[in-house]
Image 1 (cartoon, protein in one colour):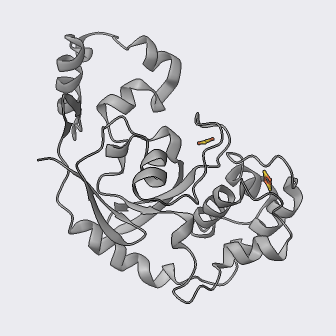
Image 2: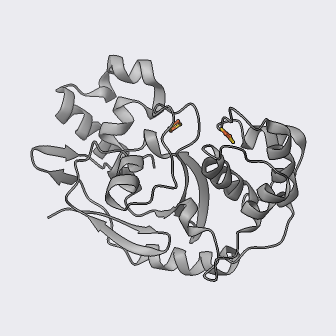
Length: 242
Ligand code: FES
Ligand code: FES
């Protein structure tokens, strides 16, 4: 039986009982009961659902903030998934990003805060300078309807070169744990299949299988893919975003 295998806040997880069309956000909230990740718009605009994905690149872990409402569950296969619940230390101490938001009075109702925390966590590990424009770009995918952005941006600038967190020491072990996971294959659930091509040839074969046409010979793209771009239907159905 096929399964989606990943690390959730460092713990190995395997899921074989969820439809491939389930979003990562829904899986986190309803199956893993990690409700810190919020649903706002459910269409990629507000950033309330932001999580961080780690993928192995040249042996080390590359972290990236993503919208979990736009990702289908099989897309996190072989990934390290980090959510807001996984940032605080074992003793409950806030992560430097969380502490910076507290210190800057950068939260009010709090609904947007987990998303900002995760976007800032990815920025914290990105090594980019704390230039205003870069900070604004890092936070551009997250909306806050009540606090205002000045204290949030100030908190983000503060952590750019702030104290190293425990993840600096833990990321190599996470990368090793990822490499121990079996390489993913197509995911099957009932009558549904999530195709996971790992080469251009395999992608074309999968597209031909789905559409009955060979995209290598033509300019065929589905209407949904043209309308929704690279995160659209074709990406959801045919690839894992790699
Ligand atoms: Fe708004 Fe995902 S819920 S971007
Ligand atoms: Fe309320 Fe940001 S603190 S939406």
